[in-house]
Image (tube, rainbow, N blue to C red; front, side, top):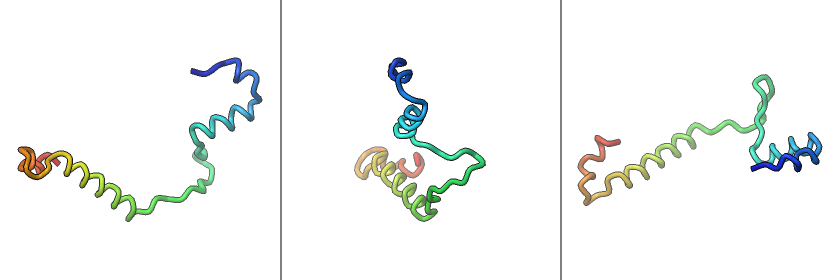
Length: 73
């Protein structure tokens, strides 16, 4: 997957920057994290929407599983 010769030709800083661009970075445990904290209401809304979509897909009205939808979820 990775060409070792490419990494040997790059500087250490270039490798770190490329890895951060590909996979993202997170602060260490003792470092300050400047990222926003998720909003509780938005998170609850997203989870509720996910369950609504799941419920609609599991037992749409008019199918045999519709009667068992509550039990399945």
